[in-house]
Amino acid sequence: MLKNLQRACIAGFMAAAACAASLAHAQEAYPRQVINFICAFPAGSGADVLVRFWANKLAPIAGATIVVQNKPGAMANIAAEFTARSKPDGYNILIHAGSSIAGNMHVFKNPPMDVVKELKVVATLSRHSYMLIVGKNSPHKSLQDLTAALKTKGEKASYGTSNTSSFIIGELYKRNAGLKVVQVNYRTSADFVNDLTSGAIDFAVVDSIAGISLDKQGHWKMLAVGSGERMASTPDLPTFADGGTPGIDVVTWWGAMAPAATPQPIVEKIHAWFNEAMKSPETVEFLKAQGNDVYPTSIAEGAGQLSRSEKQWKELVELAKVEKL
Image (cartoon, rainbow, N blue to C red; front, side):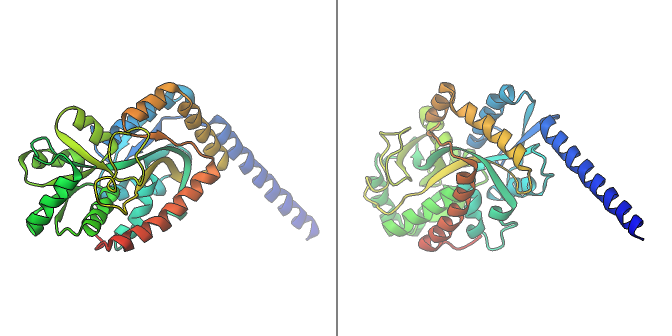
């Protein structure tokens, strides 16, 4: 019996050693196949532009083919859940606003997942805020002008949002300025361009990438940024406080996220790729042109940032008295 027990122990030890060796080999060989960067919005959107930039920037650093997969819908919940449920092997990486993903935990009545437990931040990438915009034909040249007009218009006024951050900033603006304007949720920011131009909606809240790009093209005008202080990338754009409506400070951070069970050696390798890319002057200039500031942190700090964002957004949702979706 003792010999049988010894044989069983030896066999178990050998199996465990073989498994560990196999896992180590897999991690050393990573990446061995195409890596997918998951984008939560459609091709051509502001988010898509940012994700494709990172894919192109990291491909030569990683020595791998990186493909962007667009999985839009449910204010990024579809893309986040897809990533969290995928195999934790480093081949499906969500590139999105970690703050918005965390915010969905409190914006939705029944969020599909616990993002803090089911996703791991492998790198933080950039910081930006959202812009309040009006159509190119709007008579309003400042936030003060718009606020006065919205108070007169009352419940006949409306505005557009397309994601968690724009939703919250819109709600805070309504509450802090004492407005009764009606919110209209669109699938993407591109979907409300025509409504802004025609005057069907009075204003919208949009991410910095789409905001700056379409402002330059003359599709709309930016009146305020949602951060507490002016962003380094858009120093001439007033804050809500500058425009007479204080108490709004919502800054979004973007990150690369993988399934929570992704092995640490793979996480460290991906983290190093992104950090190398962020040192490039080209990256800094590209992000600045999109209204973003570079935001590199450690892996531990990234994990803490996601947890802090989840708590912060709980407070923001309660502060704005948001009716959950």
